[in-house]
Image 1 (cartoon, rainbow, N blue to C red):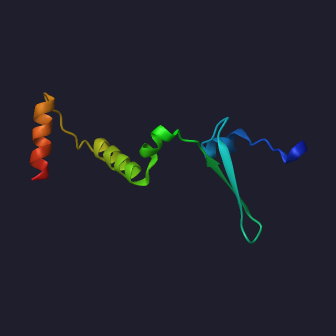
Image 2: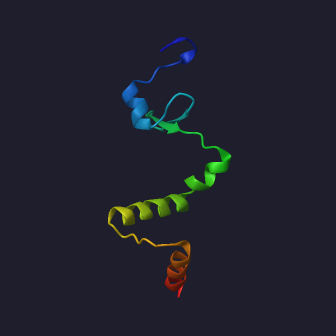
Image 3: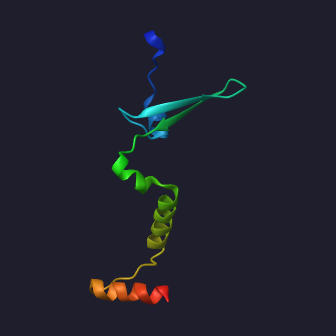
Length: 89
């Protein structure tokens, strides 16, 4: 503990929290006195849409489909949009 109640996190703790210099942390103290530390990464306002829960779910689903080889290639944009239109109907 340093003056002004400052502490330095061990590297492995910072890595586990996925935080780096400039990020914030959040402390929660439970009724039984346990302290929970969470990493809080700041997201620029113009990128907040990407971190929306629904968008992230879509990203996970897309990654799973790509990993499973469930992809399709097109020769041009016109054929891609035609396939999307067919999929809607």
